[in-house]
Image (cartoon, rainbow, N blue to C red; front, side, top):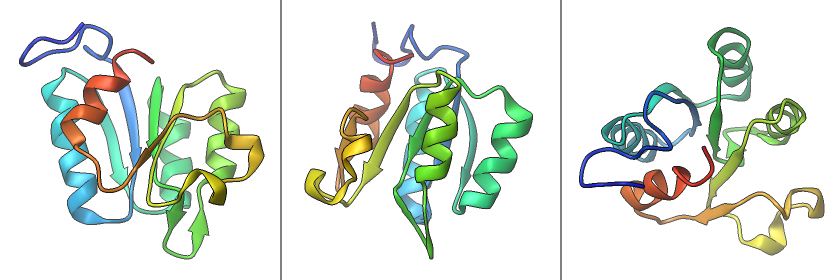
Length: 124
């Protein structure tokens, strides 16, 4: 449950943000922090995201699919194998996402970072 400042489901939870567009990444980070989440990142590359995963006890992840010259699917696979909920925050339509990821919640850009952060409380 979210009130005007905090979301119970995110309070103190570690959320990985992987986004290569600076302003979107910054907005997501701020919105998540306002809900009480602790943000790992944001990071713009798959390599940096994998490094954060190793060291940070991630509990939830918000992932852009297309990261510069890479895609985030290997990270999504690893997170899902570890039982960590994943959300795609992407410009890709559902038809552009491989069938193996159709069960992953998707927020299509442009979106409200605040609304996405509040929706994540239900996944945490």
